[in-house]
Image: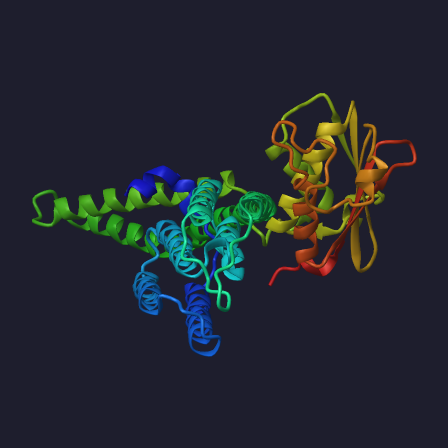
Length: 429
């Protein structure tokens, strides 16, 4: 419970989807390696080591693995379980090194492994705890240990050399742990951004599905409700007020009218909700609807143009969630750099639809343009939360439905993004 309060809910959400059985298998291999190295050193090389205490320490690691194998079936508190297991790994290895030469044991470098695992899987606080644990273990091992019996005599190395080993392990732990955590944290941020985009797409799909369901329910219930209403009216005309079922018939009429009001509200919800995927609109109308829904009036005027001489020639498209989210991300980026105007020009062929978005800003810098569409590629990374992921997500969504995105600068200056989509991606069914 204390660990859970210390790390907070963010850590529990951010665990990578790593199969616990893989971690347990790796630990079994580590235990086997420790046992093999210990027995080889004692029986083959003839080193006089405290064998029984060392075997007890390895046995504790076996018990720990069995415990974690049982706990892995329960996903709750997975962060705490991983952290406790990694702390135990460090202390268990430090205890073995204490019995087998301390820092002079060549296997002392393995103390770095749990820190690397934590930096990859867990959050910053957990990694800091493990770094401090390794630092404390290394410091103790530098001062206290059972020396290895090198041949007939015990080797006494200069204190300066031992201090160098201690310093190298300390710095390696801090540097490798921090470096791996930094890289893994960037990867986690990218994964979270993609998840947010996928969630936005899923929410739009759910809203559309709910609207369609409301329409279907209203349509299918309308006919039997009309029948009930007609029959209840006929029954009410045929019976008198002193009839025993007169009040029941009146109640039936009231409830039927109530059902009619409910179905009408479902129809109103459908009209107020987002258009569904099966509603085909001219592509320019679809984009204009997007501008009205999701963009407030700003300093930059948005102009939508196309090549058709009449509306009959404009290709129609459905409101596909991936397309809507991608165009929104691209337009948001254009809004942030445009001075006074954004032009959206639509062209098409028999097979494809091409959408060109130009702004009158400064355009893409050469260093940014060379990696356009890649994550962490922005001239404003680190400023007000900008991470350069909007364009990357837009490109990923467009590619997921069979399209492509090209980046450049317009002939008259400003940034230019060309989106090409096959008409088939908007087909219903």
